[in-house]
Amino acid sequence: MQRGKKKNMNIILSNESELPIYRQIFDQIQEQILSGAIPEGEVLPSIRKLAKELGISVITTTRAYNELESEGYIVSRQGKGSIVLGKNNSVVREQYQKRMEEAFEVMKVNAKYLEMSDEEIIRYVEEHL
Image (cartoon, rainbow, N blue to C red; front, side):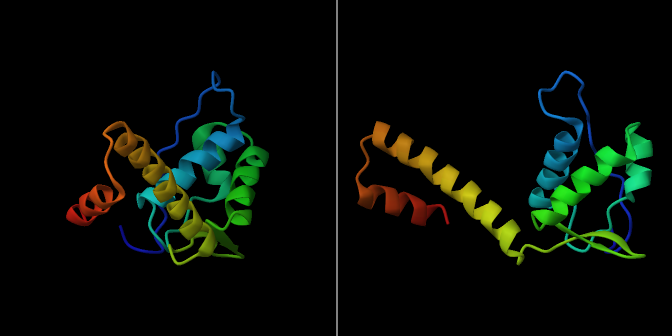
Protein backbone atom coordinates (compact mmCIF):
# COMPACT_ATOMS: atom_id res chain seq x y z
CA MET A 1 0.00 0.00 0.00
CA GLN A 2 1.32 3.42 -0.90
CA ARG A 3 1.76 6.12 1.69
CA GLY A 4 -0.90 8.75 1.77
CA LYS A 5 -3.43 6.44 0.22
CA LYS A 6 -6.61 5.82 2.19
CA LYS A 7 -7.04 2.33 3.56
CA ASN A 8 -10.07 0.32 4.61
CA MET A 9 -9.51 -0.72 8.18
CA ASN A 10 -10.49 -4.02 9.69
CA ILE A 11 -12.65 -3.01 12.66
CA ILE A 12 -15.08 -5.37 14.32
CA LEU A 13 -17.54 -3.92 16.81
CA SER A 14 -19.39 -5.89 19.44
CA ASN A 15 -22.51 -4.81 21.28
CA GLU A 16 -21.68 -7.58 23.76
CA SER A 17 -18.40 -5.92 24.79
CA GLU A 18 -18.10 -4.04 28.06
CA LEU A 19 -16.10 -1.40 26.18
CA PRO A 20 -17.92 1.54 24.62
CA ILE A 21 -17.94 1.57 20.81
CA TYR A 22 -15.52 4.52 20.56
CA ARG A 23 -13.04 2.59 22.74
CA GLN A 24 -13.37 -0.53 20.61
CA ILE A 25 -12.52 1.59 17.56
CA PHE A 26 -9.62 3.27 19.38
CA ASP A 27 -8.19 -0.04 20.61
CA GLN A 28 -8.37 -1.72 17.20
CA ILE A 29 -6.85 1.19 15.29
CA GLN A 30 -4.15 1.55 17.97
CA GLU A 31 -3.29 -2.14 17.65
CA GLN A 32 -3.16 -1.93 13.86
CA ILE A 33 -0.83 1.07 14.09
CA LEU A 34 1.44 -0.62 16.65
CA SER A 35 1.57 -3.86 14.66
CA GLY A 36 2.39 -2.01 11.44
CA ALA A 37 -0.82 -3.10 9.71
CA ILE A 38 -1.52 0.61 9.31
CA PRO A 39 1.86 2.14 8.47
CA GLU A 40 3.31 5.55 9.20
CA GLY A 41 1.96 8.20 6.84
CA GLU A 42 -1.23 6.28 6.11
CA VAL A 43 -4.33 8.45 5.76
CA LEU A 44 -7.19 6.98 7.78
CA PRO A 45 -10.71 6.97 6.35
CA SER A 46 -12.60 10.17 7.06
CA ILE A 47 -14.64 10.26 10.22
CA ARG A 48 -17.88 10.31 8.20
CA LYS A 49 -16.79 7.47 5.93
CA LEU A 50 -15.75 5.24 8.85
CA ALA A 51 -18.98 6.01 10.71
CA LYS A 52 -20.99 5.05 7.62
CA GLU A 53 -18.97 1.84 7.06
CA LEU A 54 -19.45 0.81 10.70
CA GLY A 55 -23.08 1.93 10.89
CA ILE A 56 -22.46 4.17 13.87
CA SER A 57 -22.71 7.86 14.73
CA VAL A 58 -20.18 10.40 13.50
CA ILE A 59 -19.89 11.55 17.13
CA THR A 60 -18.64 8.10 18.17
CA THR A 61 -16.05 7.98 15.39
CA THR A 62 -14.99 11.54 16.16
CA ARG A 63 -14.37 10.61 19.78
CA ALA A 64 -12.21 7.62 18.76
CA TYR A 65 -10.14 9.77 16.37
CA ASN A 66 -9.81 12.53 18.98
CA GLU A 67 -8.51 9.98 21.50
CA LEU A 68 -6.03 8.61 18.94
CA GLU A 69 -4.83 12.13 18.25
CA SER A 70 -4.59 13.14 21.90
CA GLU A 71 -2.52 10.02 22.63
CA GLY A 72 -0.17 10.75 19.72
CA TYR A 73 -1.05 8.01 17.24
CA ILE A 74 -2.46 10.26 14.53
CA VAL A 75 -2.49 13.90 13.54
CA SER A 76 -5.44 15.57 11.84
CA ARG A 77 -4.68 18.02 9.06
CA GLN A 78 -7.33 20.32 7.64
CA GLY A 79 -8.15 19.15 4.13
CA LYS A 80 -5.80 16.14 4.33
CA GLY A 81 -7.46 13.94 6.93
CA SER A 82 -6.05 11.95 9.82
CA ILE A 83 -2.53 10.68 9.25
CA VAL A 84 -0.73 7.94 11.20
CA LEU A 85 2.38 9.18 13.00
CA GLY A 86 5.66 7.30 12.92
CA LYS A 87 7.35 5.08 15.47
CA ASN A 88 9.75 7.88 16.34
CA ASN A 89 6.78 9.53 17.99
CA SER A 90 7.35 9.44 21.76
CA VAL A 91 3.86 8.10 22.56
CA VAL A 92 4.12 5.20 20.13
CA ARG A 93 7.66 4.50 21.35
CA GLU A 94 6.41 4.39 24.96
CA GLN A 95 3.76 1.83 23.95
CA TYR A 96 6.41 -0.42 22.39
CA GLN A 97 8.59 -0.06 25.49
CA LYS A 98 5.61 -0.97 27.67
CA ARG A 99 5.09 -4.13 25.62
CA MET A 100 8.77 -5.00 26.04
CA GLU A 101 8.53 -4.51 29.80
CA GLU A 102 5.51 -6.80 29.93
CA ALA A 103 7.37 -9.44 27.93
CA PHE A 104 10.38 -9.17 30.25
CA GLU A 105 8.11 -9.64 33.27
CA VAL A 106 6.80 -12.88 31.76
CA MET A 107 10.38 -13.96 31.00
CA LYS A 108 11.44 -13.22 34.59
CA VAL A 109 8.59 -15.33 35.98
CA ASN A 110 9.51 -18.21 33.66
CA ALA A 111 13.21 -17.91 34.48
CA LYS A 112 12.45 -17.92 38.19
CA TYR A 113 10.34 -21.05 37.74
CA LEU A 114 13.28 -22.67 35.93
CA GLU A 115 15.65 -21.41 38.65
CA MET A 116 17.87 -19.70 36.06
CA SER A 117 20.65 -17.44 37.28
CA ASP A 118 20.98 -13.85 36.03
CA GLU A 119 23.92 -14.96 33.90
CA GLU A 120 21.86 -17.74 32.32
CA ILE A 121 19.05 -15.28 31.55
CA ILE A 122 21.48 -12.81 29.97
CA ARG A 123 23.09 -15.58 27.91
CA TYR A 124 19.65 -16.75 26.79
CA VAL A 125 18.66 -13.23 25.70
CA GLU A 126 21.93 -12.72 23.85
CA GLU A 127 21.50 -16.03 22.02
CA HIS A 128 18.07 -14.95 20.81
CA LEU A 129 18.96 -11.48 19.59
